[in-house]
Amino acid sequence: MIDKTPLGRQAADYINRGELVPDSVIVELVGERLKEKDCANGFVLDGFPRTISQAESLEGILQGMRLQIDGVVSMKVPTNVIIDRLAGRRTCKSCGALYHVSFDPSKRGEECDRCGGELHQRDDDREETIATRLNVYENQTAPLVNYYRQRGKLREIDGVGKVDDIHGRIIGALRELSN
Image 1: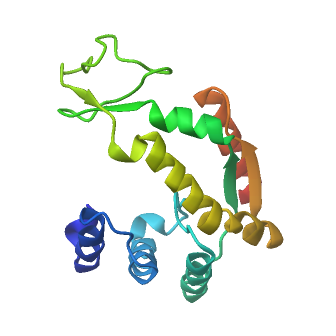
Image 2: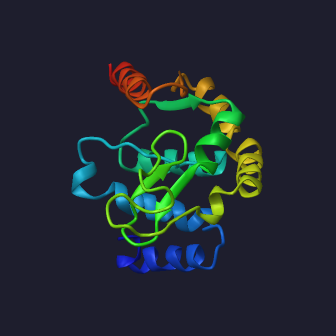
């Protein structure tokens, strides 16, 4: 869906080359998306902004739309848990079904339960790549926690536990933020 517009195709070109999409392109892409009708009554952004510069640009976009961020939910998860979660993910090459070697393994071992296709580990789910991603997070994204805390917009939740419990915490934080 991202590559249906000229701007989306530009972003897809960076992604397909394995490069980071420049802030200017991402910010403009998000800005265009927020103008769509389905965002008129609110929206949730996941994975954006990733830097303080992007957060400041987002504030400018929202001011132009006479909107503001109600709040930000940040999940606290220990590094070893993040590595276990990501390194254990497996994806079916045929149908795209997702599994986890510990939490939701395929009953057929290295084959997909749905279609029998081969399960594989994405390159960005390998431990050395995860370590690099975590380093980038610490240097570029973690400062957003203080940025939004200082603005009174941050709600931190425990991101460890059963999926339903974490989901409940997220919903609770969102409800708290919308009041």
